[in-house]
Image (cartoon, rainbow, N blue to C red):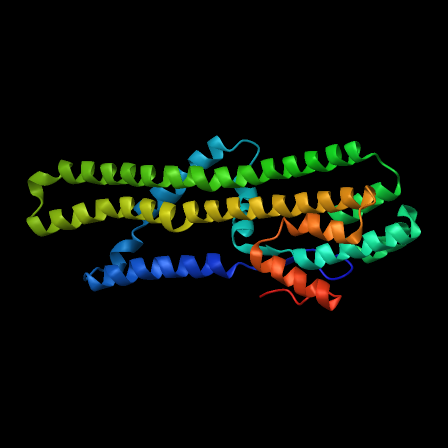
Length: 280
């Protein structure tokens, strides 16, 4: 967010993509070192059991969602939303200076320069004279509802991570049942191959859970917590301006929401009179 309060920047989450690639590469490389045959991993039956069974259980346990909407959960897990909190605080400081010098109504002229919808609506409520208690109620309810929506995504990945290994065990049991039923007419080599094939289902289930679903679910949870923290900072800034706090006090209040590295960047930005470039 620049001086005018730009919207969050969205970009591919390199951590998610990099971790997923590294995890499956390590698994595949280790399998290859042990002399594994990759063709054996492409059997359709384990894939159908794991992915089909896991999808079915998720469809049943996540109400209000259908497989057509699941793409949004994965998009959230593999997308990084960056808020330049330092520049946001600098914007609040500038608004506080204007409000103390010209009055709260003067902030009406700043609406066109604020592009973050949450912040823009909050400043508009201040200009309209909405009491602080009502502003708090309005925006805290929104933050709470956003957290609940994010919780659904977290549950999607968490439940998927719990069901996938179970589906793998079911697939393995089915495979072993077939193997045991044909013991009388099978030689040792064919028997060994059939048993190994049966355990591929367990491999798929455990890999799907621990290399994709559970890590992405945890990453979504952390992203949600960061988003909630950022929005709480916006509410604090809005209420601080309404209360008529000095620019120095506004900066001090919002500074507490920043991690140490960002606090240092804010201090440098304050000394330079403008927001420093966002950290990569």
